[in-house]
Amino acid sequence: GAVVSQHPSWVICKSGTSVKIECRSLDFQATTMFWYRQFPKQSLMLMATSNEGSKATYEQGVEKDKFLINHASLTLSTLTVTSAHPEDSSFYICSAPLHDRRSGANVLTFGAGSRLTVL
Amino acid sequence: KQEVTQIPAALSVPEGENLVLNCSFTDSAIYNLQWFRQDPGKGLTSLLLIQSSQREQTSGRLNASLDKSSGRSTLYIAASQPGDSATYLCAANQAGTALIFGKGTTLSVSS
Image (tube, rainbow over all chains, first blue to last red; front, top):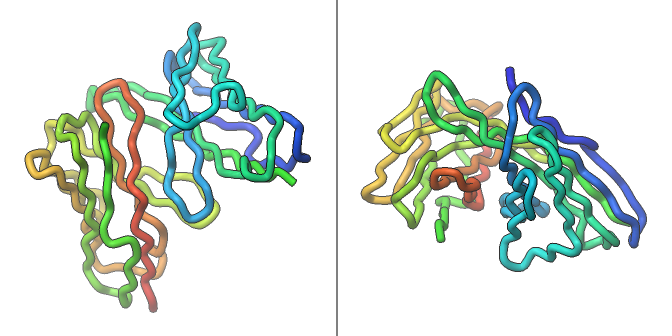
């Protein structure tokens, strides 16, 4: 069935480097995708809404110049953590709305997440 | 802005007990309400989704209810098992928007 794929599933990088995380919708198109992050023992916090062909919308407190989001196609959104620091270490999860024909509802489908560790 | 609250934050029960997890939300104009399970260090597993027009959904030993007027949802787990130990997350959204998550209830079922 249709799923959302994230890559990489985990990444370790040095402080000051940039890391790109990909979120792909498989077998369906997504004009909108959502990016979340989850710190240890905390819940998922919405970071930004990724819009295909236009600028992302960031939640309050999320630095748009640090977390670059690009949604260049209907099946791919990328999140780039620029000049990563240890405090950026987190679990990043994306989701995309999938239209469920049986129920008629748009159901947010989540990727498996990407765990970033910044040394 | 939608806020989702889950009570209790943690729960420990012996195997076999029936239990209820609570979720409340501030904006009753929701589109979907979903319950997820998250195991330590893992991603999300969707358990049940309740659409705005529905009152409840059932899957196996799980039953989720939705009362929009009171801003509440409950997840009922029957005959709990050690394998049910995990964090359970409640999330709600309006049409076309992201899901807003509660902080979760961490469940521990002892054998």
